[in-house]
Amino acid sequence: MSLDIEKLYQQVSHFASTLKGEAQDYQQKLSQALKLYNQANWPALRHKIENAKTSWLIARPVEDGIFTLPPAPKDYTVLATDGSHIETDRHQSISLALINIGRVLISYGQKPGATLESVPELFKKDQLIIHGEGQEQIIEGTLLGIKRTIAECSHLADMAQNAPDDRPILALLDGSLILWGLVSMGYPDFVIREMLDNGFLRQLDSLEEISRAKRLALASYISMPGSTEVTNILRVALCPYDIPDCDQHCSRIPSGQKPCDEVNGLLDRQLFLGLLAPGQRSPVFQSNSSIVKKYYGHHRVNFFYLRLEDEIGRVEMPEWTAVNSNLLELTSSALYDQCLRGMGYPVALSEAHEKAVLGAEERREFESVLEYALEEEGIPILISAKKKSKIRRWI
Amino acid sequence: MEDSFRIGEVVTSSTSRFTTQCYELYVLPPLGSLIKTREGPNDIFAVVSRAETSSLEPGRRAVVRGQNQESEEEIYTSSPHLEKLLKSEFEAIIVGHRQEEHILRYLPPRPPRIHGFVYLCSAQEVTEFTSSFEFLDLLVNTQLDIPSEELIAACLREISQNVEDKETILIQAGRYLAGILSNDTRRLKSILNRIRL
Image (cartoon, rainbow over all chains, first blue to last red; front, side, top):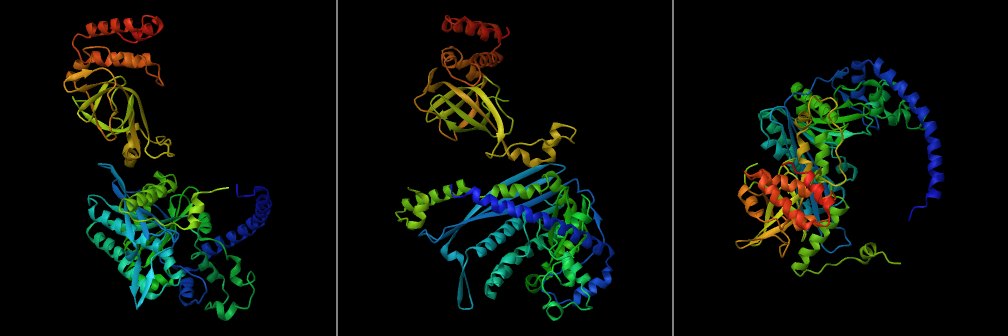
């Protein structure tokens, strides 16, 4: 056994004692945040947000108030996709990637039915290169994850195209609609364009096109979200300057002593757990992230928070779903219904995950099928000594 | 169920028994009924000895869902995907086979193939196969997780459903069993107690 539990226990025990102190700090921040949110002068605050120059992301409030969700339509269809991938590593001689997409359709009400399936797709080395501006970018790691998200969205569009139009349709993706990985890894512009304009956003275009013919809403769901875009609005409210400008006014003030630190570190979900009752949603907010503003156009990401029994979920939608009151109502009510049916997590996404997930057994199976096919063709399989040493663990 | 109804496919197979996964959830043949599959040119006959409905994925199990539902049926209509997550399977003990035109009431040379289609036997096939009771020797000597007396009695009850003269066939079967279980009257009695004339 490689983990020395005795040595670890002392560290875990110390960690637990520090958490106790943090809990008190959290309670103080939360009660301050609740007070600020409830007493906010929203029109004035909106104006202040528009002019603020902050080093952190602030959501733009679109609605006011708290909304109790209407019951979900009796008859509706939910579509969901999720993906999983395997990439052969540099310790193997063959460069390949496998993307496995789980696809789920469930129809409720009259004529109930379900389709659960998975679709694997193999990509060769030459399909894993983006060319542009005289450069090449290999699709691996984070980029392969983004390619997978595009595939999830493409399958969702395909299912939406073929879904019967006799009832409203909620199409669901797992995670964020904002491809954060594209900006956080500092990829060149041609890579971002390829992955967005020719990839993800093109699929969103298809879904939007379908939504003109069928009553279709698109959303993504994030369980236990870690975002702070709404609590950051409260930091703007606390800012004593008319035009908040972090660099100009507060860059020399140590962290913890800035005027806005009273609520800094509090998560949106912690705030809304205090504001919403089960079956209620927050107002809709618009994302102000730079990637969305620069590239997403009319697919600009809007979001709201949804209160379940013990949890807050974040629901993201493209603008064309968010501004259409029918689609917004369908998204919120059907998503809540999905969470109720799925013990706190949308049942269609949970089943899509089950169809997509590639566990250790599937990975071994993939490797053995690959080795068998290569052997049949007489292609030698080269594996690095490091990989071999992990497979055969000798003493 | 109609005659020669195709019910599923072989998913595990051995010399003495095989498991069938049903095409439809809960559409299982009754305990003791005669079914058949094929291996090459041979029909293989078997008696249903055990059935089970469980999760398709190992490690996933059902949870209660019906607390706020009026009927059991509602649980399935309000969660239509449930039927895609569950499977019904049954095991059958091989009791004979048909080579060319001959029915042979002993084990075939090879077990059925995986994915072999499995059918419920038609009334005519049941009558033909049970024109001799030698196949009961295989059932008497099989190790099961239920008492084999239960299976033999269930099998005879099923067979008797197929014939007009129910009494005669049960008396003939009883006589045959009395012969092979002459030194074990406790088992014989246990089987006969489970068959109502």
